[in-house]
Length: 356
Image 1: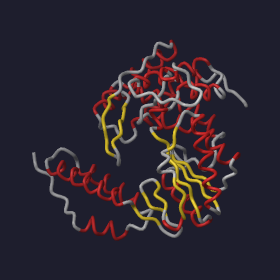
Image 2: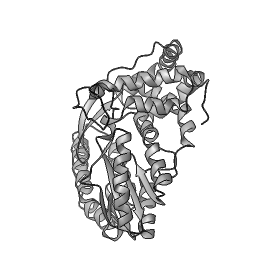
Image 3: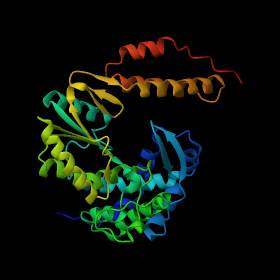
Image 4: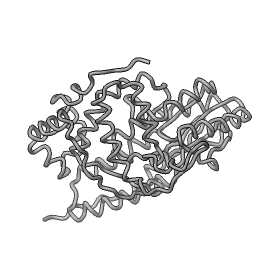
């Protein structure tokens, strides 16, 4: 396998950092921390450049908070200057890995995304009568740092670039330091001390998820020879002409996931006919149509009600409301949701913003 050297000067170059800032700030320019960074942009970028070149850069503390989407999840947001570094790193190294990924991995990749994943799943649902639905249990908290480092080093032969990746990895390890240990076959007593876990919310975490699970993708495509396979982060589908093949694959996927120090939600890893609809990425996908899951519609109604109250109180601008409704409509328009959109939007009157 070809390896790459001399990457670090590309990462730390001022122009690369400037582009990284623009990408990290996209859609967030009004946030106070982003505005403060931009106010002295050249100074802040030069400071980052010096720290990175001298290898004195150290990530800051994460801001942790819980969300319900649809289940409780811990989100860890890095300081904005660290997010600039994440973009600077990924801009250089991601293309080196992209050519090694399979076509049907859809998260955090140019030209992919949730709608492309749904389209592909629906195409396979028309082609195959049965599907095996899988998802990994506590995927991000259980990601093993030693395994990820080894996978990065198979492609990157640049000590400085690997040093920067280590800084980001180590900064997120403390978030999951107190998680209960998970043991796998062959583990010794020190297995619980293995550094693990990535913060949900980092650009690097999304990219590294694809690196980490690329062996699983290759296993399903090359070893199992699964012609119909779709993965989005830790949710993945295997399609086949008969359910007996899928039950056999299920056992082998469970075994292979353990080699990555990951476990399947075995009670959810089910084989069923595609005609009954596949729960996937917030939708139920049928061979000839797809429907938004009810809980997603309810979640948006709650969010919309909260935004309207904030607008009425003068806390947010009208463009924030417009962005929310336009984004949601654009998302759900990819399914059979005309009735839902009409029912929700026809009875919603946007209140006038209170005057100062």
